[in-house]
Amino acid sequence: MRTFGKAGQPSWVKPPCLCSVAVVMVFTMGMLIAPLMRLSRKVISADDPSTQLVSWVESSNNQVVEDLPVSGEIPQVTDEVLATISDSKDVTPTIVEEEKDGEVKHVLQLPSQQGKLKKQCNIFEGKWIENHSEPLYQNETCPFLSQGQNCPGNGRSDSGYLNWKWKPTECELTRFDGLAFLELMRGKTLAFIGDSVTRNQYEALMCMLLQVASAKPTGNRKFQRWVFRGYDFKVIRIWSSWLVHVSTDSIDFAPANMTKLHLDILDEKISEFLPMFDVLVLASGHWWPKTAAYIIDGKVVGGQTWWNGTYEKKYDVLAGYGVAMKTALKAIIAYPDYKGLTILRTYSPEHYEGGEWNTGGSCTGKTKPLEESELARNSYADTLYAHQIEAVKEARRIGENATRIRVMDITRAFSYRADGHPGPYRNRNPNKVVERGRNGKPPPQDCLHWCMPGPIDTWNEYLFAMLQREFIP
Image (cartoon, rainbow, N blue to C red; front, side, top):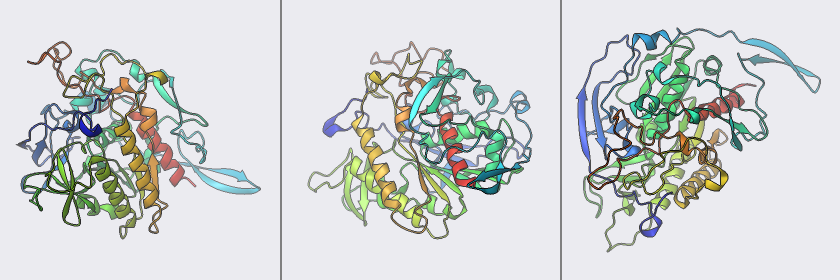
């Protein structure tokens, strides 16, 4: 259960020290792994789960480059793994006739599509039911799997967390079909923008798709991009932990080298590439407890775990987050030449009990979804969620593209899934479950990110269902 410090803030708001690591590596063009150029990583703590999978960050010279997983290991593509990934293939859709109100329409029928979801069905309301179908991929068959999310590879022996399926109350959530997804997205570009939890979803989708088709890396130093050439389909990932502009220069009484979040300016890494996206999935939230000064109209208006007591503080972390979410969504919706579908993924619940990640918090021993009576309310997370929904409502009131914004509402459904996190199985250390630090406490656990395969694969089934509603007549 989350513990709180002063003013209702979570106890983990004080970030550890900063350090940086630079690595230079060269990959051959034919390898099925993301090409990495000069690598740089800004790490707040190697133990902090929210910084485990930092990807696109600003280096000391303000260039955006890619990082390594905290473990320092690059996922390797072995011959055995390559043998499990088939070549890219085309899917031949069929044209079927549907009659409604006396009118016959010709409809594109995708493979394995069991009828379109009812547009009025809320796929985010439902419950978890037992289901023993095989996962859509295995940890051994995905070269995209970061070590921190490779729970079986890190020693987790129980598999009960894989045996649950989300069942909407009023309809069925179709099992993910990689070939059908690729056909649906033929000729389109899908982008994921956000923090390491967004990367978690992106990697899960790539794991799913690489079971049925091959992809080639064509990204650069500003973003990752993989192309499924048989479908002219591109998947892009851009790191933006706060979604707004970030600087470190001194402003007013906020000193240099401190993170400055410009709450009224969209992150330029987003705006630079917006027009090329047909679908944009974005989210933010887990970096906001870190130390920062908040800037509006060039002036310091608030901060997190920092403030000069001689001035009035107008924005705390929750208020600052609300402003930033409205800024990001409004700017995206109103951006010239962007006509894509914007999907906001709501706040991903964490499940630390007995403390936070750095104070002995744990999710060890969770092997199935929580019961209703076991759910713990989290006012901090509830407020972030409320700000997200309010930001969507405001964005929908502006611009011609205002109707092209959707919400992937995962928060309630995944509040039950304390069993789906890596917990102590965030690295290969065989002693991680029993070892203790100098303070007698166990090492930090990851009760924030999600095991792969695992519950997070449902997010991409949500995505598949949402895209079918948008792109199938």
